[in-house]
Length: 415
Image (cartoon, rainbow, N blue to C red; front, side, top):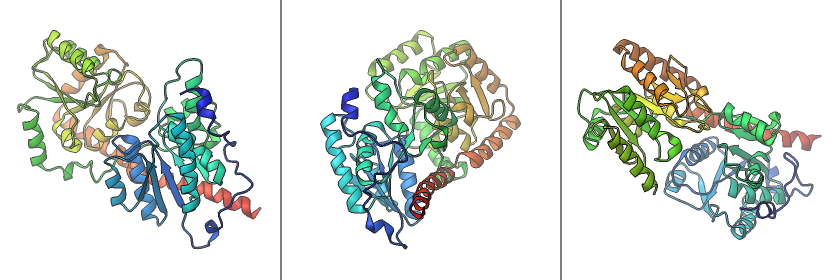
C-alpha cells in the first residue's frame, strides 16, 4: 500500500487531541458504563485474535459494553459466547477504497453506539479507525503487536506508523516498546507495556487427562521411552525448523523424537525443503512434521522440552510461556521477547539465533538433567508464569489503560 493511499483517508489528529465538536450527549449519563470498540482484520486464529476475545470478555465481566468489528471468522462464536457483540465489515482488506469506505462504517457505528474508546490491533483497520475516531471524538488506542517489515523507501514505515498514533500505545513486550521508541520515535509517556497472558484454566497440567495425552501419542505414532522435543509454530522459514533439524544432526542421537507442530499454510515448498533436509541428515526416524494441533495443552504434556528457534526476534513468543505454564522447560533464541519470558538456566535456556551448535549444546544439557532437576524447573516455571504472564493480569492492565484515558477526559472537562 502506498504512502498516499495510507494518508489519504484523513489527516490524523495529534495523539491525545480531541476535536472541539465532540458530540456524544449519551456519554454523559452518570450511570452509563463505557463502550469499547476493538477493531482487527478477522477473527480466524492467532495471538492477536485470542487477546481480542479475552479483553472483550473482561470488559463484559466489568459491566462495560464490548464491541468487536472485523471481517469475521470462526472465533466470532467464542466472542459472542462471552457476551460481546461482533459487527462484520471488510476490515481485512488493504484496498484503499475499502479502507476509505470503512471509515464511514466505523464512524456510523461509533455514533450509533456511543463508543468511548476505539482500540485498533492491526494496521489496515487502524487507519480507518483513526479517521473515524477523529471525526467522532472517540479516544483512539493501539496495540503494537510486532516489529513489522519496514520495506523500501520508507513507505512501509509510514504505513506502520498508524500503530504509534494512539493516545496510548500498548506494547506486548519491553522489546516492542523499545522498538517503537527507537524506530518510530514514540514518546515513552504514551507507551504501556502489557505482556500477553496465558489462560491458566486451559494451560494447567492438572486439567489434562491421560486419555488426551495417549490419544495424541497414538495419532503422532510416538513410541514409549523416548524424550520428546517439540517446536510448535507454523511452517515458515523464520520460525527456525531448519535450525532445529541441523541441531539434532549435531546432537547425533537417535534415541529422541522431535515434533514440528504447525500448518504449512500453503508453504508446500518450504515443507518439502524440511522433508529433504531430514532425509539428507538421516533423521527420518527422529523428526516428524505434524499438522496443526487443536489440543496444545496435551501436546505440551506429551513433550519433555519445547523449543522456539526463531531466527527473527519474536515480539513476545506465546509458546515459551505456554510451555512453562505446563511445567516444561524451554529453549529459545536469545533475542526479542524471549529475554523477558525465560529465566536462563532456571526455567530454560537462551541460545544464539540461527546457530545449530548452540541449540545442540542446550539440548544436550537438558538431556543430562535428573528427574529431580526437571521437577524443580517445572515448579519454578509454573510459578514464574503465574506471577507474570496470566490472562487475568493482561486484561486487568488493559482495562486500567482504558480507565486512565477516560479519567484524563473527565479531568479535562472539569478544568
